Amino acid sequence: MNKIADLIMVSLDSPDPRAHAEFYHQVLGWEITASEDEYAMISDGHTSIGFGLVEGYRPPAWPDTSGGKRYHLDFYVDDLDKAEASCVQAGAARPDFQPGGDRWRVLTDPAGQPFCVCLRPQD
Figure 1 (cartoon, rainbow, N blue to C red):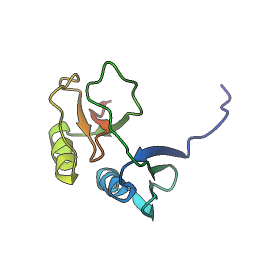
Figure 2: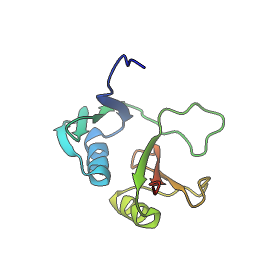
Figure 3: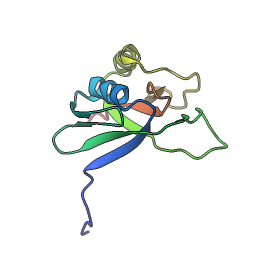
Figure 4: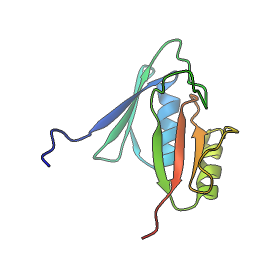
C-alpha cells in the first residue's frame, strides 16, 4: 500500500504547556525542544508532541461515556507496576476504573488527560 503521509507531530490542548511537556519528557525521555507559556514541545528526533495553551481547558472525565474523547496516548512498557509508579511519581494519577486487567493501566496526566501504559508484547 502506498502511504500519503508520515506522522511528524501530535498537538495536544493544554492548560499549562511547560508542565505538560515536562511530564511527558519524564515519561518518554524525549528532549524538550520548546518551552514557552503558550506552547511547548518534546521530540525524539523523528516525532514530536506539542502542547498548546487553551484558556479555560477542562479535562475529560474518566471513564466518560457521555462525552467525546479528545485523545488517548498508549505507551509500551516492560513492567506495568514500575511504569505506573514512575508515572505517578512524575505527576500522573491513577483513576479507580481500570478496564485493562493485567495488560494495561489507565492513568491521567497532570492536565487530567487519560493515557495508558501497556505491557509490551513478548515475542
